[in-house]
Image (tube, rainbow, N blue to C red; front, side, top):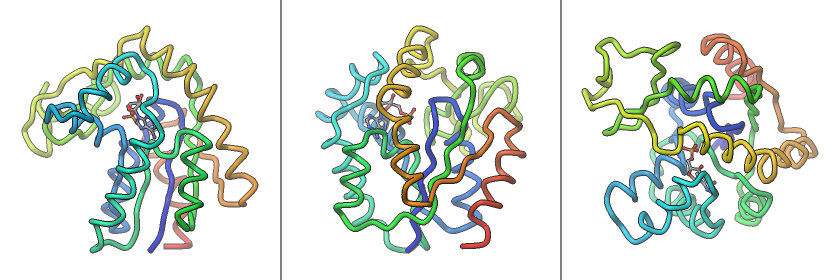
Length: 213
Ligand code: AMP
């Protein structure tokens, strides 16, 4: 089983790149953000707890996301590997993965400038049904407001409001960016220029992992 991590600031293009990678390499995509949004939509107790934190741009507690990851590893078996998107986001979460004996093959860090992030997230849309990300400037759906894949309605995420985006960026720089050093030490880190086009970043990602898969 292969394990890949895609990390980077909010709006770096993790979800978009993940969609391309999972198809190519038969990986199971685990987006902790998408799993949390599903819990919110289903109105579960976990969803109710997470909703306020997510809408403020704060992280949900480590134990909550760690349990979700553990559950996905246990229940999904018919794949060649896992692609973690948005996890780990703290040193404690990275240590929990190590403690569980998960051997990460590659950590892909999508680096994007802060000013570009704010600009990108103001034009981001997401399918309300299947969660596929779109962008009304750079990744338009064939029919305005409608998901190409499932026909669901495209919506603006509540945490993509400019003031929430700024807070999410602060949280990224304070709590998540430190993981760059953590994974650099293991020799598994690969830097990808996320300022370039979707296709350019995708090519770089495939080069970084291609020889392995
Ligand atoms: P994302 O879809 O990855 O941008 O995540 C959306 C929101 O879900 C984040 O801003 C956090 O509030 C929460 N979240 C997602 N993944 C994690 C994580 N690994 N640890 C803590 N909170 C998370």
